[in-house]
Length: 198
Image 1: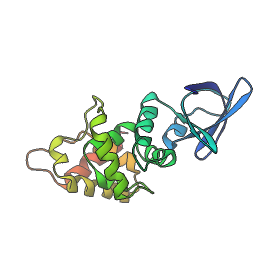
Image 2: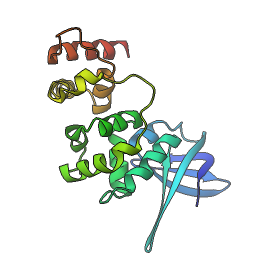
Image 3: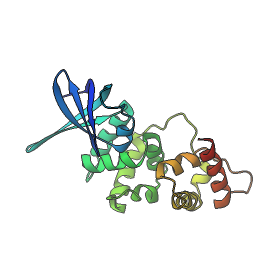
Image 4: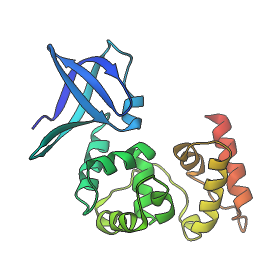
């Protein structure tokens, strides 16, 4: 089992990187988020790995953090979720946002990932909800979780404005309703202020 690689980044492409470790080149399949965290070609790199072995194929998956690798391992333990689907999920979300979506049972958000149907989304929630620990960082308030439709409408509006799913999710995190003001408009205003600061 290969646990990690330390070497020089030789190439960075769509869905994978090539790493030279003492003259041996390893092709490592990665999520878009992990690839974005990689340095420039020729620089030193450290990548956590997971080796997936089948009868006809051996693949090496790489991760920029231990947390992402651990979540990948949990995802592939879910019936019907293979490594490629797990990587697609991790490409759509950062680790904390995905954990929050699973724990809050946000089926709409999970099914917004290409290739993830409602059945698989429900299976991920059912099998992983109790196994995940949320980070200590403050997420969207529990009052808002009770009214998912308001949150989902605001998130979709941000996506329609051209923001990515991750950007929209992060911009909405931490919202606290001010009295009765739990509206789509209030959420969007809050998110846009966060996006301007970023």
